[in-house]
Image (cartoon, rainbow, N blue to C red):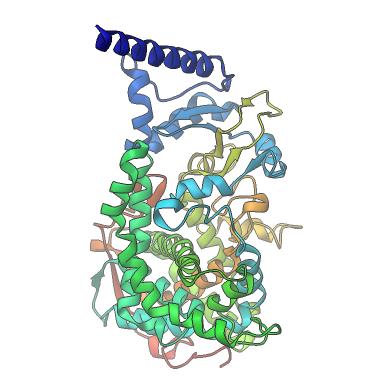
Amino acid sequence: MEFVKENLRLLQAVSSILFVLIIYYSSKKKSNAPLVGVEPGILGYLKAPYRWKQDPMSLLKEGAEKYGKYGKAFRITTPSRDMIVFSNQEVLEELKNLPASVATFRPAGDTMIRSEYNFHEGMVQDAYHVDLMRKNMTQKLSSLLPDVVSEVTDAFEELTDVKNEWTNVNILDISVGVISRVTSRIFVGLPTCRNQEYLNHMIQFSLNVMKSATVIDVLPWFLRWIVASFFLKKKDSQDIMVKHIGGLFETRQRTKTPHTSSTTTTSDAIQWILDAAPPGTPTLKLVQRLMLFNFASVHTSSITLAHALYDLAANPEFQDPLCIEIEEALRTEGGWTKQALTKMKKLDSILRESSRMNGVNIITVVRKIITSHTFIDGTYVPKGVWVCAPAATLHLSPELYENPEIFDGFRFYRMRQLEGNAHNYQMASPSLDYLPFGIGNFSCPGRFFATNELKIAVAYILCNYQLRLNGGVCGKKPPNVFSGIVCMPNPTEGIELKERQDREKSVLFPGHVTSCSL
């Protein structure tokens, strides 16, 4: 009898707790934004969160058709959270200007990459590196150009074997290889940037972060560490990174004086991190910070480069005009300078148009609401809920762009020719209708460097090679594929390259331009 009584008491206690929790959560004020993605039938609401993982684009399109095109917000439910999606330009302007005490990216950023499993807890929240990264990669661009040009040239020639016949290449793999080499040259320098073991682990780690973060997001908390260990093998990756670059941090720390900084020593990411890190930061955490740099820089830029090359292969009529512009800019400015890159306006337009149609992330401007807030359109968002902009559908909105479904490579070049627009509509210039880099205080700090890195890579490839889709088909780029919120070119469809007949006459022929001057 005592056993029965004890179990009855336990059952009553559990029931009481569940009752209180149900009352608490049901009484919490929810957002008034309508939910999309619920199929008819009794299981519709249960299946809705998993539609986001299976086909996120279909939910964004459904929301855009039902609500977004009328300027109304809508709600998407995922296995881990609700998200309120804003398309209204006035609301996005309000969101852009909200203080961090109301809406902020950083805790959402930590969750998006699952930093507690992939790096260490609070990695993005404690973003002490961002200002130094923005300063060093933007203000010191001119001094970085020779290394970027050198590494693009060497990496592409080593990764391909293309002669005067059409040759099929996996352009996504090549893009990853080129961008990882360039990124490593800037971040850690020679010879580490060419160490294949280091590069392989850096690339694999970035891929694993994307995979594990996507999978972990749908799991209950008690399974997350197990799955993260299976996907990531974090310790193995970190051990390799510590082996290659831990000593660089430790050597710099030993020789550091109160007057030592990136202005007086080697200017690379090792020094930038040391300049910004709190005193006494362990070597492992310094290495993890560099791994975050690598992840943020490599996967976004390499996918963007691959998309642009696919678009140029599908639309070959843009290739020769671009080569003429590139060669003229380099000859006029005496080689690779910031001024030469600025003069490549048609190339900038191509990159912006490709990013408009194939943005790496289908949602951007992600914020976590810190204080419950009612937006100017009347949408109430409670504390803890995420909000975002549907970049993929906004970029294809006929209200914002003429013929938005058509790749018009010189669209933004023409817009910049209009009076008063000379400095607008650039690849690295975020706006409410162009969101690959986000907007506001949390827009991508490395976007200026990334844009010029991409210009150099595309310029080198275009002026040395012709591109086409497999079989010479024009205008029918293979449909993109999606991994979570990431939009990638179809990895099963390659591109064909062939050497240009007059390649050796090009300013960009290997050996002709090896520094910032001709």
